[in-house]
Length: 109
Image 1: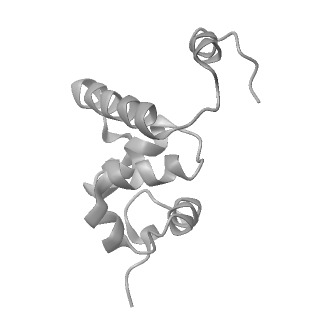
Image 2: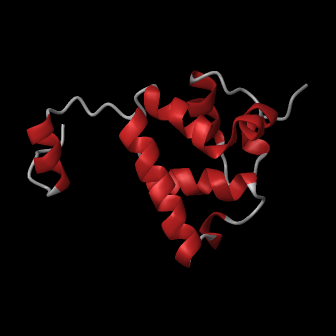
């Protein structure tokens, strides 16, 4: 029997359920995909982007505490996260709405 996703440090039942919904049903499957490909699957399924969730996965796959990410490493992870969101998250907003959302004008749906 394969180890569950929740056997990875920092990842609990909620993350395990989210990954199961996108076909990632074991710790080994998550390790094989890696943070970026796995998180892209979540985004493509409609999961709302959340930077902390992203870096918790990265830290967990490295066997590190979730809050161990700091400084330049965190900045680099943020750039990776932003790129993933840009490529894989469909906000359903028009170009104008996206710009207004970026500056905090669009009402949350």
